Structures are given as C-alpha cells and as structure tokens.
Amino acid sequence: MSVYPQPGSSESSIEIKERYGHWIGGRWTDPVKGEYFDNPTPVTGQVFTSVARGTAEDIDAALDAAHKAAPAWGKTSAADRARVLLKIADRMEEHLEDIAVIETWDNGKAIRETLNADIPLAIDHFRYFAGCLRAQEGGISQIDETTVAYHFHEPLGVVGQIIPWNFPILMAVWKLAPALAAGNAVVLKPAEQTPWSILKLVELIGDLIPEGVVNVVNGFGVEAGKPLASSPRIAKIAFTGETTTGRLIMQYASQNIIPVTLELGGKSPNIFFEDVAQTKDAFYDKALEGFAMFALNQGEICTCPSRALVQRSIYDGFVADGVKRVEAIVQANPLDTDTMMGAQASNDQFEKIMSYLAIGREEGAKVLTGGDKAELEGDLAGGFYIRPTIFEGRNDMRIFQEEIFGPVVALTSFEDDVEALATANDTLYGLGAGVWTRHMHRAYTMGRAIQAGRVWTNCYHQYPAHAAFGGYKQSGIGRENHKMMLDHYQQTKNLLVSYSPDKLGFF
Image (cartoon, rainbow, N blue to C red; front, side, top):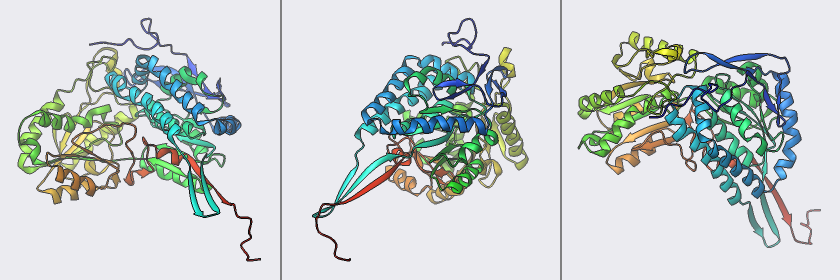
C-alpha cells in the first residue's frame, strides 16, 4: 500500500498556484474579462484553486495564436512532428506519478487507475500516432498511360476540441495526438469540472510544442465551448460528452459546414451466457470481474457496462457471486493505491446519480447491494462518494434506458441468444457492449449482431491504441484510438496530372 500526499501539501512535490489562466500562444494569459471560477477536488469537496473563466474574446485570442502557428506546423516534416510527440511521451513518462496524482486530485478517481491505465495509455497514444504519422503514405493512381492522380494528405488547419471531465488527460490526448500528428493547430477547452490537470500537463510539456500550436481556454460550455464550436475560424470540432450537447455541437458545425467527431453517451449491455459458469475456474473469475467493471472510474465512462444480462439457467448462482465481488470493492482515500473506487467527479454528478438511485426504487427495481452514498471519515467526509449499486429490474425501466454515468448497474435475465440480442439492442445508444462466453461461434455471431461500435469479447474496459473506438446510433460519429483518426484531421489533395503533350480535341 502507498498513500500519496495531497498536492499542495508540505509532503507533496506538486505545486498548486492560487489561480491559473489560459494557455495561449505558448504563454499563460489572463482572461480578457478578468473572471475566475473555483475548482474543488472531489476527494474532499474543498476548493483548492481558481481557473480563468473564458469567453468568446479568449477563444478569439486563442484562434489568433493558432492561425498564426498553423501554416508552419502544417509544413513541418512528418519526422519532426513525430519527434515532438515522442518527446511529449518521454516527458510524461518521466513524471508519470505526479501526473497520476494530479489527475486523481482533480477528478476524484482512484490513483491505481491513473497510475496503471489513464496516464500510461495517454503516453502510449502519443507514441502510437508518432509511428502512424511516419508510416503514413499518400497514393498514386495510374489513370492511363499519360495521366496520373496523386493524393496528398494535408492538415485541416486550426481545429477545436472540447474535453469531458471523466478522463480529462486521456480524452484530451485522444484528440491532441492525432490532431498534432496530422499537422493541425489546436484550441482546446477542458471541462469546467476538471480543468486543472490539463493545465498542469501543459505546464509540464508546453516548452516542447511550438508557440500557438496548442492553446487551452478554460470556461463553461455556453461562455467558451459554444463560441469555439460555432466559430467560422475552425476547420473541425471534436467533442466527447453527453448526447444532448453533441446535438448542439452538430448544429454549430453545420452552420459553418465543417466536420465533427462526436463520442457521446452509452448504455452498454454486458451479456453473460450460461457456459461461463460451466466450471468455477479462472475464466469464471474473470467474468465476475467483468460484471463488476461498471464500478471502474466510479461508473463515469461512456462505455460503462451499465446493463448486465445474465442467462436464466445460471442467474441465481452467478448473480450471488457477482454481488459478493461488488461488495468487496474498497472505497477509501483515492490517493491510496489499495483504494478500488474513488469519488464522483463533481457535486452535480453526485446529485444526479443519487436522483437515479431514487428513480430506480420508485420504478420498483430491487436493490441487491449499494443504493446510497458512501460515508468516509476525516477530510474525505466532504467528498462525493457513492456505493457501487446493483439494481434488479426490467429493460424498459429508466435506469436501464437512461445514462446514469455512475457506479450503477441495471441487472436482468434472458432465456436464449435471441432474447439476449433483442434486449442488448433495445437502446438509443450503441457505443460499447460485452459478450462473455466459452463458445467462439456464439462470441462471433453475437458480436457481429450487437449494434455497437465496440464489442468486448471475454474482456471489458480495455482501450489500447490501434483498436478503433466510437459509436453506432446516438453514441456518436467517427472513430478514435486508431490510425484512421488521422483521416479525421486531414483532407485529401488530388493532383490530376496529364503528361501528354496532346490536347483532348474538344476545342
């Protein structure tokens, strides 16, 4: 067990300034209107710093800097751009523990996740896209003996990116790495709930990036996010967040006819077939862990396996074992490496989840475990902690159909493959799904038939680079985590060249 000291304390090497501005043109910049907002840590519920409250004027200043930097960065060789990404990855790796503590303090998640997943994945993402960039090639099409079509990849120019609060650094990197690799300059807006960790990351790596190539403007959605997404001065907008806001982002983008990538909500089914329990071996133990995965990151994941479907023939035994596994989840100080689940990211989210716990009961769902806030002691008593909760009910209930975004799973049963598939697909969303079975034919046919962009098979919550991630239906547009993301941040220039000295003969 290791317990990291709280940032800003005398035992910690992590500095906390009284306030933080925007990062524009390679330097810290005060907000044009001079306003700041409080940033509390979910760990204790206490405010620990304040952050610049950006407006349209700050967005314009950032766009000025980005447009100034974009031409030179776009013409920088692939080797040199890749080298910058690799240097960023190396710098982050050197400071991995500090970055992990910073992310935990700002977001509330358990330090074991930031140490072993969030930050290592972010580091690898920069390295992955550095490699993708070096391997990327254009195309040549021989139309006929004297006519050739050349295809070149060109950056879009200046792009906007809006980052969610559930994985502040990792989600930022999912967008930054391909955008920078593709040769774009970026204006990025962090979530107002978790701006600090991104600002600390920029503080760490800002000197490695040419001035104006990455700009960070903090603030609220209407005041800073809307001016960015609706600006005619960006060539693309990328957004991760809830589906309702995603619709607004699409409306803003449509006004300027620019492309969008949207990673939106989910209500992912996690399906456990009877053969999982044919023997109580390592695979069965793995499946029980998969059942408990709804508690990872406090359930604040768009792909949270928030609907568990268990075949009736094994229902009683598997669910009993699943409840035991969930009740063994350790909730304590998020800075303790033995803690398995931390705090919800904000008081607003805490209250939203609590309201759904009440809704579930009102609908007649049965609480198998959890169902209330978690009471912690000392300075943690003011934090935003909720016990992992298992509801038993029907798929037509609100807790099965609406995204709660918390450590809550809605559990039901099914008779056969046909009913499992119908229930799995009975949702507005299609971001993720899980299939657990020892039969590979079933794994393949179910995986292909489920309407989701990613179907984990005998695993869950893995997010490696080089595996495409994105949604069907109302879960979004586009894909991340894969080299195809370069295409989202580039446009194709075609040079159609005739090498013939002869005219066509029409005129």
